[in-house]
Amino acid sequence: MAEQVAEEIQEQRPDNQSGLLVNQNDYLEVGVHIATKVKSAGMKRFIYKVREDGLYLLDLKTIDTKIKVAANMIAMYDPKDVVVTASRIYAIVAAEKFANIIGAKFIKGRVTPGIFTNPHRDDYMEAKLIMISDSRNEKQAIKEASMKNIPIIALSDTDNSTKFVDLIIPSNNRGRKSLAFIYYLLAREVLKARSEIKTSEEFKFKTEDFESKSEPKSNMKQEQQY
Amino acid sequence: MAEQVAEEIQEQRPDNQSGLLVNQNDYLEVGVHIATKVKSAGMKRFIYKVREDGLYLLDLKTIDTKIKVAANMIAMYDPKDVVVTASRIYAIVAAEKFANIIGAKFIKGRVTPGIFTNPHRDDYMEAKLIMISDSRNEKQAIKEASMKNIPIIALSDTDNSTKFVDLIIPSNNRGRKSLAFIYYLLAREVLKARSEIKTSEEFKFKTEDFESKSEPKSNMKQEQQY
Image (tube, rainbow over all chains, first blue to last red; front, side, top):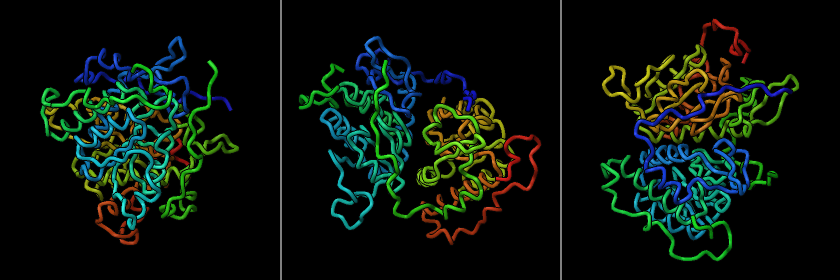
C-alpha cells in the first residue's frame, strides 16, 4: 500500500516562553544529546541527526521540554508513591540522589517479581508512578509496573525500547555527566513545581552531587567522557 | 549506516492480572481498534496489522492498557487542574460527558491563543494536565499546553501526529461508538482509581450517555458505523 502523508504538526516545537532550563552549552558540554549508533522504532522521532562517526544526536529542545513535563508530572504525586529505579553505577548515584531530594523511593538493581503486584511480599511497594533510568537494564521494573498499569517515565537512549514507556525523556542515559545533569535538573524542577523553592538559584545542590566517583566495571558506553 | 537491531523487550505485554477492562468483543464491536489508512511515524508501534481494505488495525491490549494508565494518571490530579478538549461532534459529546463526570474543565472547539499562558485573559485556565481528543483538530490546545510544559494525554489514531503528546492512547478517535466507549471507560476507571466507586458495576452511566445523537456535517470517517 502506498504510504500516504500523515498529519504534520508544525515541525518546530513552539518557542517556549521561558526558553531552555539552562544555557544550551551546559547541555552540550555534558553530552545529554549524544546517543548511540542504534535506533529503536520508538526513538526515531527524537533524533536530530547522525554525527559523522555514526552516533545519533537527540533534539536538545525536546530533551529540555520533556524534563520539564516529567518534573511537572512527578510534582503532582505524593512523593511516597513515586519509585525511581537504576541499575548501573552512574545511573544509581544520580537517580538515588534525585529520589532522596524529592522524597521518592529508590530501587537499586533488579526488582524482584511481585514487588508492585504482591502485597504479601516484605518488599512490596505501592507505586503510583515509576521513573526508569534505562529500560534495557530495568526490564523487570517495567514489567511489574505495566502489570499494575502504573504510568512509566523513562530516560530513553536511541537504542532503548519504548514499548511500555508512557513519558519518554530522550537522553544519553549511560554517560556519567549526562546522567548527573539530567537528574540534577529533574530534582530542581520537581522542587520548583512543588513551590518548595521559588528559583533555580535556591536549589542547594550541584551537578557534582549527582556524579558517581567510581569507575564502572564493564567497558560499556559508560566509559565515555560524558 | 547499517541499521542495527535495537533492544527488544519481549514482544507481548505481560499478562495483566485483571485482564482487559471489558470483554474483548465489546471493544471489537465498537471498533476502537479500527484506524485509518495512513500511519504517522509516532503511531507505527501501535499497529497490529493491515486489514484487507487497507485500514490499519491497532493492538487491542495496548489500547486497553493505555486507557488504564491514563485513568490512573488523571485520577492523581485535582479535577479542576485537568482540561479536556474536543472539536468534532462525536468527540465533543463523549469528551464533555467524561469531563463532567470526573469534574474536569472542558473546552469545545478551538482554544484561544493564551488560554493556558496568559493569566490576564478572561478565559485563562491554569491547567496541569491536558486530555486531547484528536491532535489534528486541537493543534492550538497542544501548542498552548506545550508552551507551558503541561503533560498531554491524547487519543491518537494512526494518522495523528504524536510529536507533542506524552501519553498516547492509540484508538479510533473519529467513530461515534468508539469515542463514546473510550470516554465511558476512562470516566469509569478514573472514578475507580479515585475510589469514588469500588467496582465497574457501581458506575451509573451507560455508553449511550456518551454518544452523540446528531449527524456530522462533513463526510469524514465519522460517518462509519463505529
